[in-house]
Image 1 (spheres, rainbow, N blue to C red):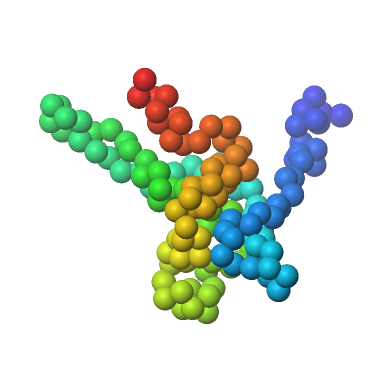
Image 2: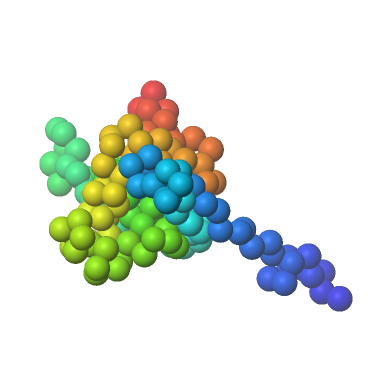
Amino acid sequence: MSKFSRFMRTNKITEPNVKYAPTHTLLDENGKPLEWEFKQISSKENEELRDSCTIEVPIKGKPNLYRPKVKTAEYLAKMIVASTVYPDLYDKELQDSYGVMTPEELLYAMVDNAGEYQEFAAWMQKFQGFAKGLDDKVDEAKN
């Protein structure tokens, strides 16, 4: 038996998908909010999403020096899209019904109430294992 047997992939727990209703404006035949299905994303997927939403901004007073800045709203939208199992936000028919062309635009069109979207984004961060929201972390870093 390997000294690392407990760390082998066969012992790793896979998180189940979960259902959540992000908006009260899409209802089933009984008038209940439609539940969407979400999966966990991997650490690697998360890094790729964050990197794709990171820009270099100049540091004031220091020519030719830049610092990374994550475009938080874009990152959260991409995280939600990557996590969504159902409905398929890449579906052309669904996108066409809302007059949009990307899964992120579809997300914003389907959950178009600002308060609901913020609650959804906070829920998603907790679901993905972030105990504190990204905005909280940014505020902490500033202090």
